[in-house]
Length: 98
Image (cartoon, rainbow, N blue to C red; front, side, top):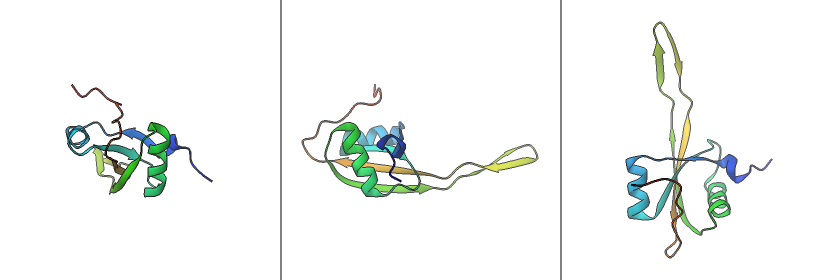
């Protein structure tokens, strides 16, 4: 079963590092589906933002243990994708940077 681009791209990562890499290296940063491949992420970004993608790098983050008194649980594992756009492509705006 194929996923829609909006199921693959869950939300942009809006942090100081994410905004800095967006401005300096023409790279977008997204929280993506844990099971999405790099080629699926590439197709999703190209479909949603109508831009050409140069490369995709991914990182998997394992959930941390969290406690509330005697009880404890784990946060969910998640995946981050850094998507570099080709030269000459217009940078999409999805967040206030100022």
